[in-house]
Amino acid sequence: MKLTNKSKNSAQIKRAKAPTKSNGLNASAKLKKKLKASLNSNDVDAEELGFVAFKEKKEEQQQVKQNPNSKAKGKPKEKPKEKDTNNSTSSSSKTFVLDEKWSLLLARLGGSSKEEGGAALKDCMQSILNEAKRAKNKDLLRERQRSILEALINSETTPAVALPAFEKYARCLDVMQMTYELLPELKPDSFVDSPNQALNYLGIINLLDLGKTVLNAKEYHIGAGTKENPSFDYDNTRQLLNTVWNGIISSCSGVEEKVHRQVLVVLLERILPHLENPILLTDFLMDSLHSFEGPIALLALQGIFSLMQHQNITYPDVYVKLYNMFYPRIFYNKYKARLFYLADIFLTSTHLPENLVAAFVKRLARLCLKSPTEDAIIMIRFICNLLLRHTGLQRLICATAAASALEIEDPYDESVLDPVKSGALNSSLWEMILLQKHAVPEVANAARFVSKSLPVMEFDLGPLLEMKECDIFDDEVKKAAKQFMLNFERPKNFALPKTDVVTKYFDIL
Image (cartoon, rainbow, N blue to C red; front, side, top):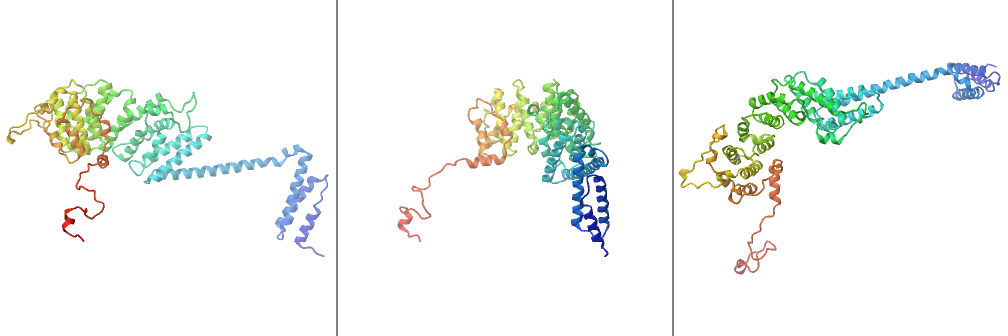
């Protein structure tokens, strides 16, 4: 009787069911050979293969019980090598996936969508935080931070859409110092050829605040580090800041006005308080003041004022420049609040000549007739403060009335550039009388200070600098209007009262 391949395999497996203890190793080898033979055959039963595998595993467990040291000998020692190769393969695949994810996040970071840019920056900073827990050196974190800054500088939009989201992390001291370490390497080659990259570069610096508020908060993104190797050191960061500024000032020659304006903003708000030798800025600020007009000249004047306060430099024509900055177009400049702030500080001294201060009073009063509502209120309050500081100027209020219309002539000449020669001291504040009939009640009420006794205390101009025209309108709407009586009886419906004369003699359908 002939057996098929399937029956032969089953017969062989049944003979191998009961191996003796003496020939356990030989039986295991025979089982492996039979298993290979069954795999090579075409007719294989799954139950038979499962039985062979189960039997082989059980025999290995018995061998370990009889000889525990046998597991450390022989070929089973090679299995960990396979595990290491598997681990290396999985780690390399994970690294590939992370790099691919990082590149996608950087692409969103430099895009034009504000929502995607903010979310991508948040994911990038969270990824840096997670990698910092596993990384032993800072090279990887430094490269991650570098790629984020490069994406922001080379963004499609100006300013980069993700810059507002970066402000939160820029207040962390460790992120701030690492950013200052990387900025000298990432500076655009030329601010003239690549103005958009220059503006994004300056926008990043404008978020790095080394003021007392941020330093006292002591916020960290990754950690404060150790005493031997802290993640933030003020002196080191200050040196890096000076290095960054030296790179900026070397690239400012011949740049566009918007780039020049942003350089001055960054200088005044972030750089100037921490410079090692601020007196070197004098030439740069003087050139900016005399070569440009409008916001650039105003920002340069603020820088010169700071040097006058802290470095004791002298600038004799500062009042002439300040006086000529007050013209109607300045009210449409977003830096106009700085102009009022500087004028208030420059004219604080009571030892200034009266003819100089009178020229400022007349220039402000004349501009009140041409300015927007919110600016007119600021200048009226400012004029009142100047009259309180210099009591001799109150003669401008008590000017004698003209005998006839032919004698009405204002000796003040607003076209003269020198305020001392404008003849303002011989004039009067007739503009305030005219403003008392202004259509906006807030302006009319403010101008009535000349018709009554002057206040004892000066007005605080701080809240007025932030006021807008819509705020004035909202305040007027909220005010309760006076009610005037038009009837003896309050009407309850559209019908006339019963006692009315019309209803007595006429029937109204």
